[in-house]
Length: 200
Image 1 (cartoon, one colour):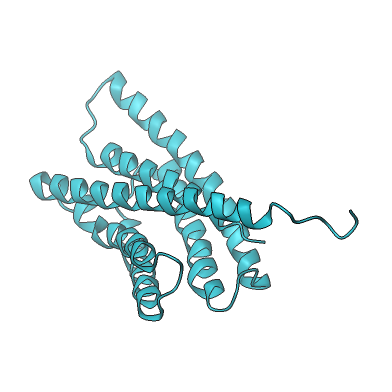
Image 2: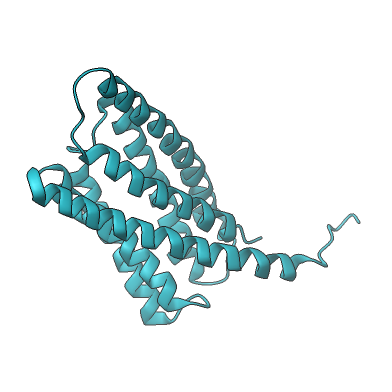
């Protein structure tokens, strides 16, 4: 069993959505009715992150417990997937209850170091069929939260420029995740096309 294709496409969707979330949560909110709409929009996004977080955390913990993949792939693919689920839950709950990522951006920054380490690990041991792309995905995904305090805890142009940089990192990482995930879908389908269950 290899569920990585759907995990990668969910990751891609969430990273691209996170670029939008950064834009929404770093721009000034005008007073009046648009402010209410913006707050409701942020709460709607929060539910998305909670849903993805629960799914990723549950399936990541399952992967850590069962090791469904060959060899070291369980370490570099399942462990970060569970971490992604936990991070998504943190983001979702923070957005829902506070409408902001300012305070939580600091601990998330330290979590961002972990996928960077895994990305370097993938390059060192030449893991996956596309180690360069996979490493870039991990490193870009880690750099975004690592830089996030500079977007949320500063003001003015610095905040906006760092926010735009983070959005670019997330968008590129999301596209890479989709590219790898879509390719994996067709590979996995071809590999399992003749499989039948033991009872038939």
